[in-house]
Amino acid sequence: MPILPSEYQPKKIFRNGDFSTIYSALFRKVTGVTQQRERLELSDGDFLDLDWSFAQEKTDRCVILFHGLEGSAQRHYMLGAAKIFNENGFDCCAVNHRDCSGESNRVHYSYHSGRTDDVQEVIEKVLSKNYEKVILKGFSLGGNLCLKYAGENRNISEKIKAIIAISTPIDLKGSMYKLTSRRNLVYANNFLKTLKKKTLIKCKRFPEFLTESEIQNIKNLKEFDDVYTSKVNGFKDAFDYYEKCSSKQFLKNIKIPTLLINAKNDSFLSESCFPKEEALVNSFLHLEIPDFGGHVGFMDQNNAFYTEKRALEFAQQYL
View 1 (tube, rainbow, N blue to C red):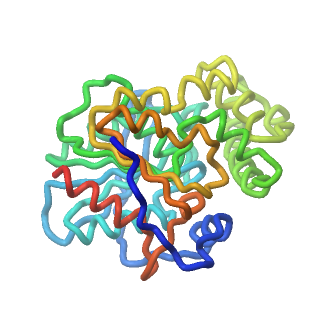
View 2: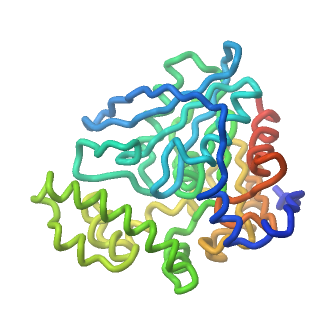
């Protein structure tokens, strides 16, 4: 599929990638979404908290939302996505990854960029409610999960009609180098602070797997993935984790209409996160590269994201 042209032309101030990223993360507020929480018990004895919001009338359509690193279903990019889909006849299941719903999970491991078995269990739960048309939409880490899931040669339900990924680090190693570079140090340190805080809680509960001193001594995100993410999830080290969980290698296998929107000025993404060659040879993969948007920061008119409108338009084509 040829690379799609982008119509996103924001106001001048939102053409700065950092301003767009920070404003959308810290200052944008979305109202009018009422969520109801449901706990999904997982096959490994753990749980996921799902935050549901609903269309005004009964519908057979549902969008499942997956947030990014250290996000939650209450992040305003999640609420904005839920709102536009609710207003256009979709129920919404907003997933909180493990340890992201405000309560520490039951097991010694947590969420990560490749845990697609959790995606599968969420989909099964949603389909058990008799939805006939389901859309997957992921942001950043959540986008990587959706794309990896779609390309893993699973037996995917025909009720999954489309997949949308926003600001997605499809090459985890490349993005790690970008995120831990000097220009992104503030962002990286913010992620690391909350990750370490959550993991220290696990250290007290599961001292046989890792110690508090191991976590306290971590200096950057690469070290966190070496010491914790890879260790407790069966990977050799951070690079093994990045290699096996990056969705880029799975794009060629996708057979569901898929839209990937990555902004050219997203400082979190390496050049390898813009899969032009893969898009040109896979008719199911639609790639859009706006000049602007930063990382999950596509602010448009009336306090809405450009990507929210585009996601709805794309989904409606395949219903």
